[in-house]
Image (cartoon, rainbow, N blue to C red; front, side, top):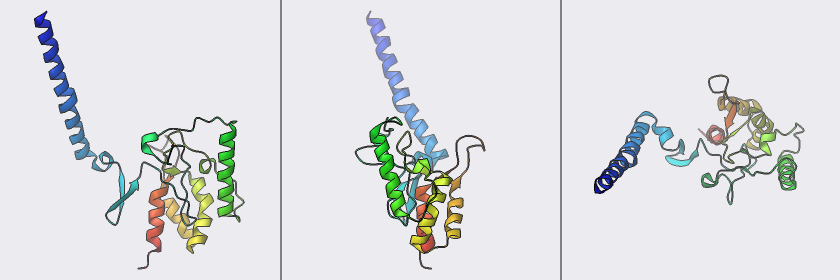
Length: 193
């Protein structure tokens, strides 16, 4: 029995060392070597300061910016530690009220826009953290952003196109526009030379 206990203890120590120390260090080292940007959170920097991640959405409510897809995380929006959907079904009164409130805010921000509002501007994604909006959602907002910033609609549309990412391998997923990257580019385009 003592022999079996010694074997069990040695196995535990060896496996703890290999799987708890060696393996994580090796994988972290490989990730830093091969994919340093992704391994460090895909952070986006402006003037040497991290302003966000290209993988996690951020709230924008100033009319001069493109607005992100709503977040269902709580207690604060886009909380990476609370990634989840709202779990509210399409007939849930709370969801219907939240969607109507979002529609009202969008209509108030751009009262001249009579286009149908794309669904991703009024509903949260499954994770509540989506950093992208659809090209249709960006097109819906382009006129408002151009008008508020005093930029030509063509210039704003070109920036949207620049930040539109296609389907993975040309067939998986849907095209999307990274809102944070687009808004940072809008700010840069308006800086005086």
